[in-house]
Length: 329
Ligand SMILES: Nc1ncnc2c1ncn2[C@@H]1O[C@H](COP(=O)(O)OP(=O)(O)OP(=O)(O)O)[C@@H](O)[C@H]1O
Ligand SMILES: [Mg+2]
Image (cartoon, rainbow, N blue to C red; front, side, top):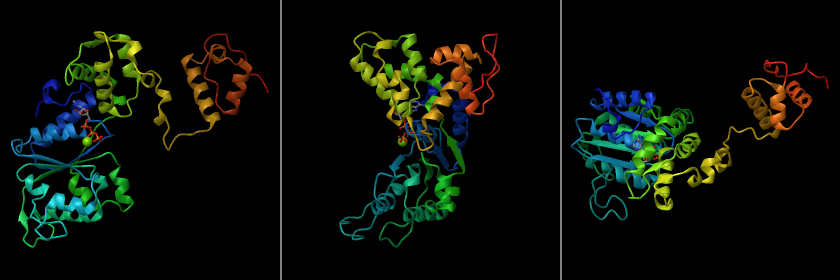
């Protein structure tokens, strides 16, 4: 399937990697294969699932979504597969499950990594047999459903840890589609800003200054497209002029390093480590010129040399005569 116009696809992007992914999504959409969509929160997993459904032969049948992480397992089982009257306390009437409701269409299992082992076993059975049993039911019911799933977890690790069945993993994952985080595709940011300014809440705000856009592109958007969308919606309410300017950009966007989730489990908290990283970055910025780098950091060239010696780092080759020979301790 050829997708030349990203605007028409409902899935907005101009990033080459994401356009290639979209082409692939278009190709698999017309087949019956199961696809696993991976990506950080807010990267557009649900948008991609809709895209695949809409480009499939099932497009005029239902797309039914369920968030497997939001409900407790026994409830999930009856939501997915339905139940017979009297199957458990409170099952006063017979109820069809979402799998049955999606018959002929697509079932989107969001946060599939959160699914418990019993539900996984039942889902696997359905994928193998094409039949379901309602909770408390005896007669299998044939259902024709295409499964798409999404996760922001690393399912392979879950498989290794025994939290996710390996056989199910291979069943739901004929193809994996990986959405990049927004920080890896900053050129999509202007597209989204344009889209979100002119959809949703009406507002007098019509544009953004180049400087403000630069700040928006530099911010790493840990909440991805959803965070960007919420930020634009706030601008539309709070900004009093036609254009968003530098002064309207919130402090946390201007100063990403002040983000509370700046750290993660892999962060090295040692001050010395942060200092080393900073010094090497500053040196790179000044193309290895140690005098300029030391001046900029407010330390003497001798101190800089001593620090580099401590790190066991070869000082980057200096440009010009501004750097003296190494100084002994
Ligand atoms: N490529 C895109 N084109 C248009 N809108 C997008 C795109 N990606 C994300 N969005 C918008 O960003 C928001 C978040 O997208 P979505 O709900 O698909 O993310 P998600 O990956 O499913 O997030 P979560 O893991 O938190 O469920 C939605 O409002 C969606 O419309
Ligand atoms: Mg989602």
